[in-house]
Length: 393
Image 1 (tube, rainbow, N blue to C red):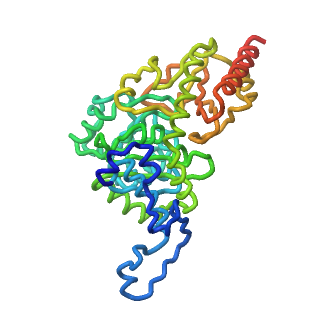
Image 2: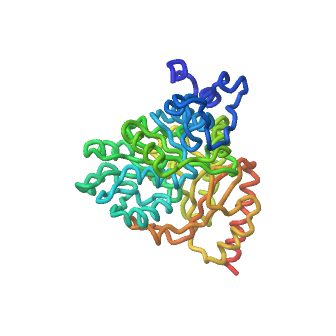
Image 3: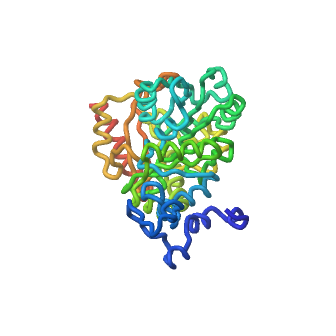
């Protein structure tokens, strides 16, 4: 990235990162390269990679366009593309841990992260301990002689705790520990962990990068020795993203800033309205002044997105079903980050081990899409009425 690019606004950079119209023969978007085999005209070119590429799994102009774009946005030395967000998590952990090591993982982590740590990593002789998301510098008390990695996720994608990343990073640096963060919620537009010294920033690009719920990709952006280690491990494991998904992620980046601003605006409006509803116990949105980590969020984040959670007052499962089953605009689904609004009932209490979930009522995670807010509000208002009516029947 040259000095001129560094001074440009994010919106400007998003339009131009990863583009080289000369190499694309004048086309605005880099072409889609599908292929496995690359042919070499001479023995010398076979040895030297005469075209700059050796095999379709390792690199292509399509892959390089997205990798270069994310390197610039993240401030990374290297970006590695994977088939999904979970594969980005597992690849990074496998790259940076070995038998006999210990990893500290936030108790608010995406549940499949925990499943991988408690299953395959444990089978490899790697120990996992879970820590309180709000632990900050006190994490030093949990460090063992064999602790090699601290894994963060901020905010937690269901329970929305914000971590004190600079404090945790400072402790990690003092103890020569590699840090990884799942930054899917914020994207590099709203939070830049590598600028704070974090070694590896992960994303489920399936969410906001692609933005249209029609493809899957994971990204690992890293600096220094961690970048080299992750790259080597990804190659050894045969990890690569699909070319079509890669191109869709690159296309999604062009409108990322615009989409995030709309997600943020709509989500905040609905979150504030939900705070006024009698059926609601708590609204967990870090950009709200009522959130316990709001000051931390204001300090470290540039903005919020479309994801937040709501805890209802105690209602029966039947009443909750009446509410969510009748919603017209909020579909139930495991993902988020697309143009569509989603709702997902969840209960973290069975799998949280370092913290206790303090609420008794059902919890709902919302992703607010690009529908008109008044329509979404009307849909939720009708759902809350069904909830209340069922409870009183």
